[in-house]
Length: 259
Image (cartoon, rainbow, N blue to C red):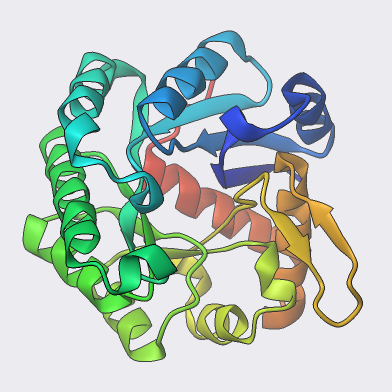
């Protein structure tokens, strides 16, 4: 059984060579490596160019946490210069959950500007957008639709079900992370989403903690297998058949090249 981690921050993973070897041994053949800011884009590009197994597919963009209007043009220019290396634009989006953003109109507007500019680039390049939405799910969706984005994934979706329905109606995808084990919101959303519009990921190196037991683990790309197992238990699906469908979804959305 082969797997695809559709969302990983490889530039933040410690002992990356070991992590990639472990991923390959676990059957992970493809990883979509997303970026956070200009420095992250540069690091991720080097990782992609130097890695062979698993195959790395690159997303570039500015995470809402890192949204900085003053650095926007430099990042967009870097993305343009490396268009040929790209599989996606991301991780981009809006996050008004942060305390320092929640009541600050200037920071919210900065996120909005950075998000829209990246969406416009995704539209221009005909690339999928990897969207981070938290505390502002509806606005993220409407902005993507207004920009004319045809391909997108709302990663680690745990938002309202009415917005989920509209995301799916728009033809977009949602993805599940290992948080599916403990997050009621994520479980409810992913349980409602059809497998044909679902992806699985790790969002590594996020640390996942079980609130009841206190146990946890630092995610690596190999842990996409954990996500698959949790997903299949939730949906009462056979793992190998589910993996085939989920992999096909990833290939379709990201136009992954198979060598």
